[in-house]
Length: 216
View 1 (cartoon, rainbow, N blue to C red):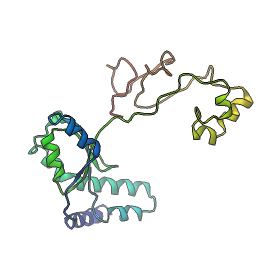
View 2 (view 1 turned 45 degrees about the vertical axis):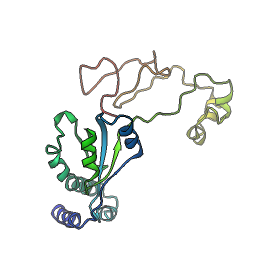
View 3 (view 1 turned 60 degrees about the vertical axis):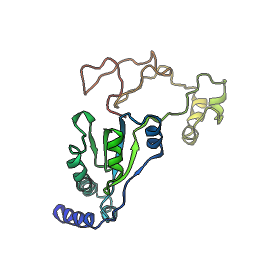
């Protein structure tokens, strides 16, 4: 199946419509605000025409879908990865590839971003920006959580009847020890500060706190 899929994707890639990439609004704003700064960008490639239909036809065969996604990304990204040196993108640009999203993440200068925008195999170039969540609530009026007030309760808590369970069984999490396996968190966050009992990094022995050092 691998050889047949590869041949098929190569042929449809060659027949793809030649249109240049687009820049996200946030990246355009960042370039306008600081036109000389290097930006961390997500370069999403154009999928091979027919690739999505092929993957959809695999009927949720996990191994086959994964293989098809990886082949699509490898083919779609090959030319750009080969051109990075000529574009002046070196090892210091922290280049990372992602087959699931069919994207390449890298640090790029304004000139390099302009070159990426002109490429026919790139769909969109976006700023790798921090997403700010709504601020947490420091104080809660007694009784509001128990009654499911929209001011302090999320739809998920209400949908799972967590608020009713808390009220019925008089439980509020006091004394509960929670275990998390993830790439890290902000242990200085007011809701976590002073509450982290223990932690360990499975990536580096040099970390001094349980921060996320994997770009999430």
